[in-house]
Length: 162
Image (cartoon, rainbow, N blue to C red; front, top):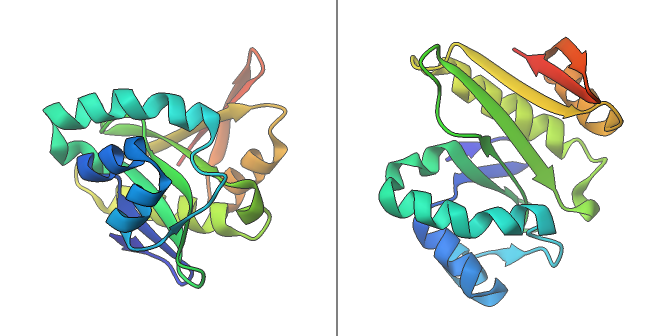
């Protein structure tokens, strides 16, 4: 588990993925916390069955995919993780999402900064990258505030690294 002053960032294990697929109440029982009505987003929900199959084969990979719990309300409010583990050059790409009600409160910067710090402390990670649409100003600000540098911009996408 990774912890910040306001957030718990926990591995999204095979068991938690299974609970998610069974429904909100089952996930709440498995986690011991509330789950926001807005979670998972439709985009993230589409990835969950594929995530289940990958974790069934390699349960240890749950360290690369995490869910985010806001401590004060004890509520699951988002997800963050890597698009797979580090490649042969030690590069990982991160992605993240928050429910609408948790946005504009500094949570995204808090979770991106802390996960990036954790990743860069690992011996198998040399660089963390991210990308976002050039129209996604809030995500770009999160990456800037988290110490990422804009390295490229093409085809409507911004590419970042730290």
